[in-house]
Image (cartoon, rainbow, N blue to C red; front, side, top):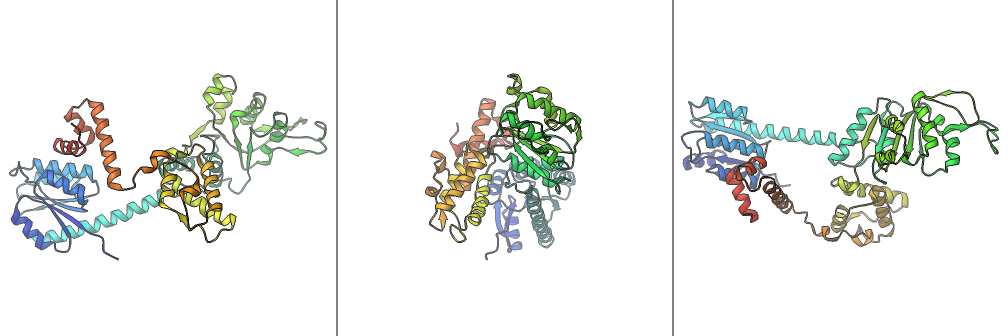
Length: 452
């Protein structure tokens, strides 16, 4: 396997120094620059890991202002770059200033190639270690809750919030569109808590007729009504010691809201037809896709009950707002569906076009829709890969969006420029400050994207 290139950028306006260092650093992929603008250009193009920067750059070759400005711009663009500042013998103050601004180290002239080589090698080594640490940290941050799949910042925040409250017995309200995985999140909360060994009981408040809901939740005594031939405990009592998940609580009838409020306040219930209070230890997690504030304003949901069920509120983002999570979910669903449907060999994966379609599609039905689409594609696919035709979805013009990183960067650059110009009405100073680039760099970007 080819060894990864180790780019070393040398910023110095003296040709003699450049030739000397070219001979000293034969083991690296060398890139040279003679000015601040050229250094920034080379940094953007090659993304060097280590930079040696002479502070005396034109037009201030006798001073350090241009070199310090170059350092600031480099670290703003690539914060992890190791910049070794090269200074004159009597330039200690500027060297200290550069270290304070984020330079990795400094070296005083005259240049000793052997010593500078040791410093550069150490910078590459430290950069490699830091890179490995960032990878490990990222891997740790993407370790999610049981059953939860995704690496988007939106879902990582949800996971962190769940981990924070898992050990604390607070009533939790999960808000999100239908199909976003509210029950999956509630199960993950239960399995991460101290109640993991106890029961997780889920009930859909919208799926049970109103006349049966009370007995379903609270249970009933023998003879409480016609057909009650024996004592039966309800879902709340069945969840004693564990977690009760009340899905679609926004559809709970007002009469039942009063009874649920009393249970949440007193942590006691009475079975239908009974007179005995039963004390319970149950963690309650509620969920709804509805707008609770609107329900309260319409008189369909009690405000006091809302305050009880929302000690902690967690918003679960729709799939369209979870960056590239839909692709990760699709691959996981495909693997699980193959096992469940007994298709052990085919399909083995998705075509590039299929992945683009999955990524571009808005998924109005969220994870539930994605699961149905992928499961059907696994069942109907005859080739080694699932194709766009197997998926049966159309994402319109978004499918033509490229995966080429340069094109994605160019588009993001262009949109950022347009937004900055609209915010500051073409004021170059304010725009360059907002974007964190120098005026010359801003002019270069304007020329690149045809903005006048």
